[in-house]
Image (cartoon, rainbow, N blue to C red; front, side, top):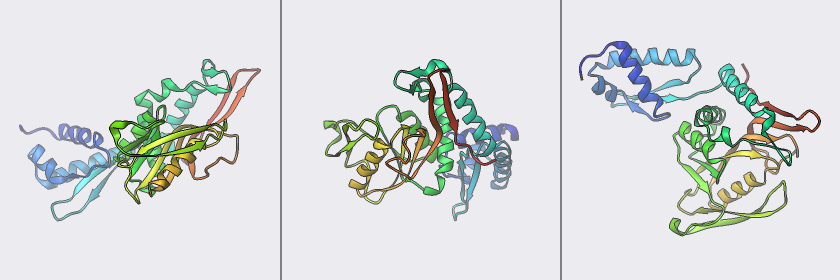
Length: 273
């Protein structure tokens, strides 16, 4: 490769790191890629780290090693920068044309907007980072986009529980659970190959009312001898309280809809700034 300017190297480094969050990239890889000495690469990475942290876009974690060590990008989203994202999403969720009969709000356009889900996934990753999950679990279907972005931010496999079993996935474990909101009995299924015993699992869901689905997912993990390390939810209703599970964190709390003014009451769960 022809010799490139420092600013060009730093742009390329940032692209390589951001495209592979949580992945340890050896310093020797950058040395070979740019044809530069390790000391030069280290100086460039220090500048990238300082810029990331200054703008609250994440950080670079350096790992020492006999082979020269490496660096990984941790996509932190916290503090004022995370809160600004939550405010933007809140403004969209409060649009009056989202009201659906039955006291619900329409969220599909936001759930399938990958720009928004990427940022929210990184916020959830930051809040659950100390739980060290091995797998991210959700149930089909609307929770999948958010769970995908959480899995990407953690750089961990995504597992999806189905409403019914598929012959193509081999033997599976199924459980019946009672939805907390309607009291209906439903079924969810997970292939036995999905989660090994003693795996640490983070559950992700898009909407929680009473917590029946999250409780069912937790029971499914326990049936597979896994360990549930927490539950992350995009929107949780204020009532009923308490929920069927207690170890959860939501990004938004939905208080309801004023029938007279048609105003949606939904508030972000902010980070400390």
